[in-house]
Image 1 (tube, rainbow, N blue to C red):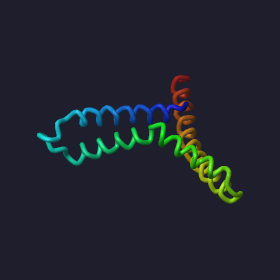
Image 2 (tube, helix red, strand yellow):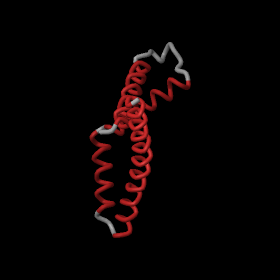
Image 3 (cartoon, rainbow, N blue to C red):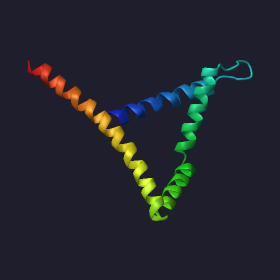
Image 4 (tube, rainbow, N blue to C red):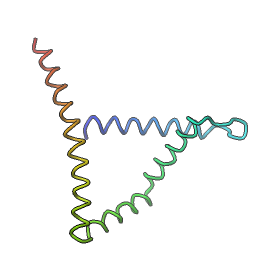
Length: 108
């Protein structure tokens, strides 16, 4: 797991905690602001995506794509590959540069 993935998990934790604190508010007495409504929707969306049923649904969709025709499998794999190649090459480049510059600073 890279540092970037850990940061993403930490941000998701913040989304859940903010959403739960807003969820505890009595909406009968207090009207939620647009920001609070957005944070509440983010939390419910994250919970729905994390639910076992939605993960099974996503797994079945991926399995169906991988058992399809050659063109379907090619499109699916190439989309995954291009996303991951861009993401990791971009972030790994900056991580490597950061460590190299830090090492140069400590070497002096």
